[in-house]
Image (cartoon, rainbow over all chains, first blue to last red; front, side, top):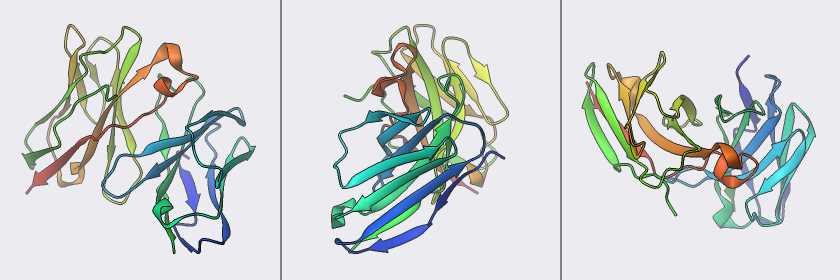
Length: 114
Length: 115
């Protein structure tokens, strides 16, 4: 199983809503990532978790709150988002020594904030 | 600051080889060169990586210049399924815990394949 599964695939939310994006992998990877991708732009790194601990936060606004409840799951909690936060949110995972191996990406959640 | 420079777009004919260039003139001795691609409506996928020597795998070949200031991703026979954005990324092995050790995507090259 080399899949990273993201749910939901599509999400429309209002600016006052609270929602969560979910990401799951069963490859035994101990590093997991969130990226944000706007249309026709490259993915931008948001957060990195290593062994269930947040290791990198790329100055992401607090309305995005990541959580890693166990080694297989990664959540991104969303609250009070703005329309400019509409984007494709990608989750990825890799082995801890990932400089020498590949990262696996999910298909993403396409988020629209109205 | 961008660490890699790639052409915005390239075109290829189906079943012909494709050479995708990447310039990284400020590469350090501890930077690994990684290539990923992103097909339309999909997440990125790993293609290949290397440090100094040329590398081959089932998807592609990576040719690295002797001074490491540039590299070329080679698709030996392009298919329509290879139409994607190709990203050349440097990852610093000494900075794994920091941003520079992670996958930081540049603008990439959009490859179109004509039948």
